[in-house]
Length: 406
Image (cartoon, rainbow, N blue to C red):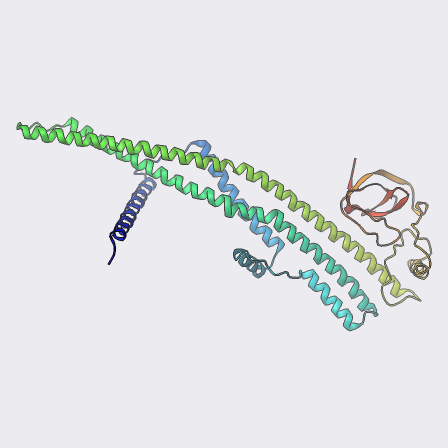
């Protein structure tokens, strides 16, 4: 048996359900009549309409940019689905090697089987190591992009925009309620006016006069009730319109935040491509040295340690490499003098170092991020490199690691 409290609760729930169903049906009728042109519709003010349009555009373009950035960073649809599932489960995605890292590891494994001392094996080792470096740079790009760009965009769509959408739906309901109340007031006043314009004087008995007065009072009461409901609906609509307006005006702050995120994303891409460009330049130089070493008359089969021939004198690169290798165990490498450069020197200026750089041989100059150095070029020099000076130290430096100052 149910207690009286339980019966009361059930009755309340049933009444509330019936009331909600009635409100929903009334709103549906109003909405349908508006679409058919059979009912008047309260229009929002121009400022709020512009804010709504701007908000919709922000949401739509943010979704497109987010999805396409995900495709750019992870072209594999299956991998994207896996990342999405882990994200929804609030679990950390297991760390996986990038494609370049896998390729590099396969090359190293192949070199171990073919023999690292063979020309093919040693070249596989060289290329494989650089592939792994490229993969590491890609991994850093993916991590930085996800943190500084994708996550803020996703947070906007799943957080702020959901709140805005909820308040906009509530505003639409308040508008429908307001127009329903306006229609009721209009109908009540029309009924009252019709009754006043055609009173029933056919019957002269006092009873009929009493009934007529009673009906008039009821109509007047109906008008008062409808007008009261209209005032309440208008107040609720105005309040909800203000809440929605304030939220939509916050889209300007969202644009500023996304602007900063976009700058961070572009910087991450610039860093990644600069690293890739530098790695590939280094790889090309080392492969060239490998080819010269293999073709030399008395050279070893494996690739020699990187030594640039641009700053060394001698009849051939192979001879320079051989002399450098034979003396490396007994003599400390010396930085080549700038007199060996081709002159004239042009365009001396200051430059800020963007990233740390370890010199690959004695012809290059190691760099530390944020330090200032003097740079210039010489006639006939590779355009991707400059001569850097820091005190008494001089050497080649890669342009992609520098920010040239005026």
